[in-house]
Amino acid sequence: MTAYDVDLVIVGAGPSGLYGAYYAGFRGMSVAVIDSLPEPGGQISALYPEKDIFDIAGFPAVKGQRLVDELMTQAAQADPLFLLGESACELLHDEEGVEVVTDAGTRVRAKAMLLTGGIGTFTPRELPVGEEYLGRGLRYFVRRLDEVAGHDVVVVGGGDSAVDWALALEPLARSVTLVHRRPVFRAHERSVATLHASSVRVLTPYEVVEIGGDPLVGEVVVEKVKEGDRVTLPAQTVVAALGFIADLGPVQKWGLELRKRHVLVDRSMRTNLPRVFAAGDISDYDGKVRLISVGFGEAAAAVNNLAPLVNPALGTTPGHSSDAA
Picture 1: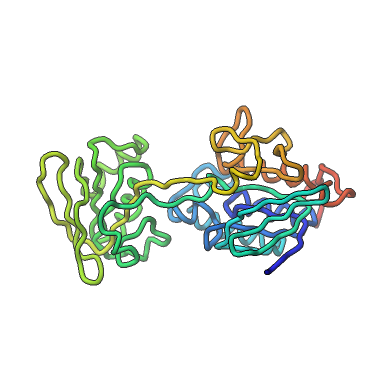
Picture 2 (picture 1 turned 45 degrees about the vertical axis):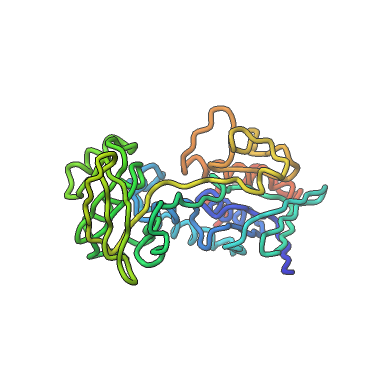
């Protein structure tokens, strides 16, 4: 069984967790970061790596994956230990620290813990047909847009993700068709207006009834809801953007005080458990605003407030980073 001993263990490698890793290093701490996904970035890398994000301070607009890449470069200054593809299953704590046990059997002993798990683990809602084509043309997100350049693409779904993928792929794909089983989209009004002004073919209310091709996806058959009219679409890629099912998983059994699937914290980002803090989307308090930029501030606040637990000589006031040069 592999075991590590660090000052701070961070559970969640999304934006808040990565910034927390950097900031803990800035405060002189050794850090381990655990995440169930095989790569850092959390929801950004998994759901919208090529989407522009507009509310990050200092960036008028920044692609999701670029933001993650820059956060990784920043976090590297702390030389954190990354345990990716491992889920934090068990949490033990005593007067001197905490211990996190992963599903791979890895044990991480730390003097404090920062929980930045976003919405928890999440799995895509499956397309009712064609699951056998997963990895052979069917996918639930597109990590790099150029992977499907020149393809006939069928996007399935009616929310923001589906509309965003259709618009993002339009300039690169040979053709893009968006299929939604309802006549009205759930996406942002501005995005829907842009969609209808684009070259994307919109089929509503239709649903996918069959995917064909051997061995790769070659076509998609859609059927008009209630009327039965069928249309066969050429396709080499099907993006099923039907949403995700979020699950806090073992976190729910750790004894944390929860409110609507979020972990309650006080103004210092401290939970009800000793030496356990939380920041980012998973945390909750009165007046909470769920923005990436807010998560950065929460992670810094948590690290500063847990610092004396790691080293009694450390205060909660860090000074200015410009003074550390």
